[in-house]
Amino acid sequence: MLQTKQLAYWYTDKDQYLFQDVNLAFAAGHSYAIVGQSGSGKTTMVSLLAGLDAPKAGQILIEGTDIKQHGLTNYRRDKVAIVFQAYNLFTYMSALENLMTAMAITNASHKGAKAYAAGMLTKLGLTQEQMTKNVQKLSGGQQQRVAIARTMVCDAPLVVADEPTGNLDEANTDAVIALLNQIAHEQGKCVIIVTHEPSVAAQCDGVLRLEHRTFTWEKQPAPVPA
Image 1 (cartoon, rainbow, N blue to C red):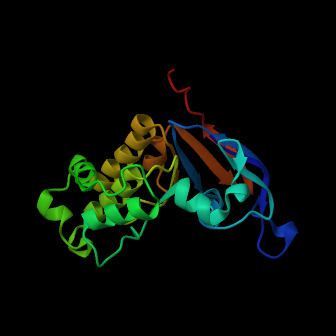
Image 2 (tube, rainbow, N blue to C red):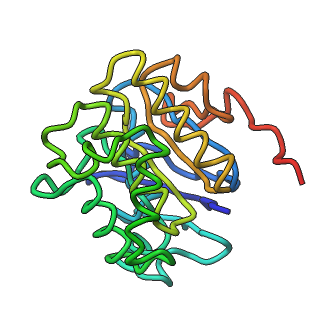
Image 3 (spheres, rainbow, N blue to C red):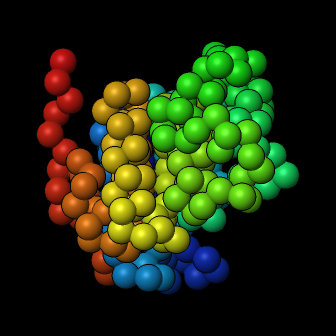
């Protein structure tokens, strides 16, 4: 579903690359963790996969097409949903309004369907009262659930999450990773998570380690059942 071909990135000096000649494949229906030391380039990689930055060399293909052909703006709108550590919700809106806005911006198939958005928030454990509150009045765990619900109501086949549990306690961390796995396994999306937490990586189907400027598989996902 998502591939990199001879991917490389550096800041100013090509000889001081973060990584190069990276050839990876990520399948729909699986969750993946990218792990490694701070500063190794994990967030840079996920930024490239999300179309937030462009590689210095090589290609990123989604469903067989170079993302450059989509245009990065179109790619981010149509193909990618991003979950941030800081939630990145519209803070002047309610949880429900955040979902409705996301569906409108991305022209999702359920655009305008308030009952569908409310149903998704209910599924993720928010009450009617909570989903109509300003999101700043929700707990950190609840806000991250709203951010995840936002990815679930949009049609993007790829979900990328950069340290999505960094601000959460253990119980909320487990709940959030369970939800991200649910998105992969039940909605058939490709979910890629950057994390520094071994317990988070252990719950993902595949684990990639970035070390010494090289990506290696620590765990390969099993094939998705036909």
